Image (cartoon, rainbow, N blue to C red; front, side):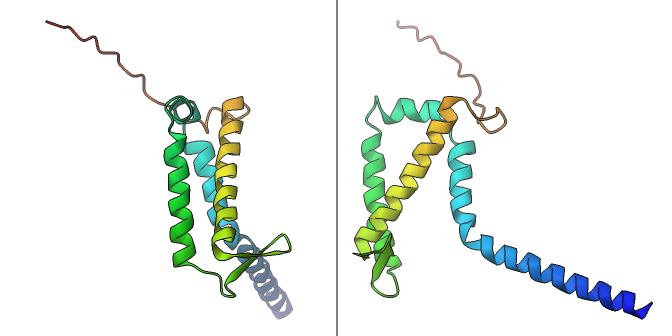
Length: 138
């Protein structure tokens, strides 16, 4: 009977080791997963698209991207001073530019998926009906 408890204890220790290994494997990807979930499920792309393209809202997005690049490259420079991207050695600002453009591309792809209608209705945010107000001029 004691061998059963010893083996059960070994099983629990091994299961804990496997779970901790999986957690450490997935931990660096949590921020990217949150980014994708936000742009897929929390943004109404129909309304955002109506602001970005016809009303020149994309200019603000581009300026926000430049601000992200400048702040991120100043606050968190790489340890070696350069980034290694696809076998290339690039400077800090170029590396952060690549990362920010990739984040914007992922957000755009999430918008394309939502606008294509291939998502279930539970992920698309519902907006309350807007009441139209009639203005009376005196």
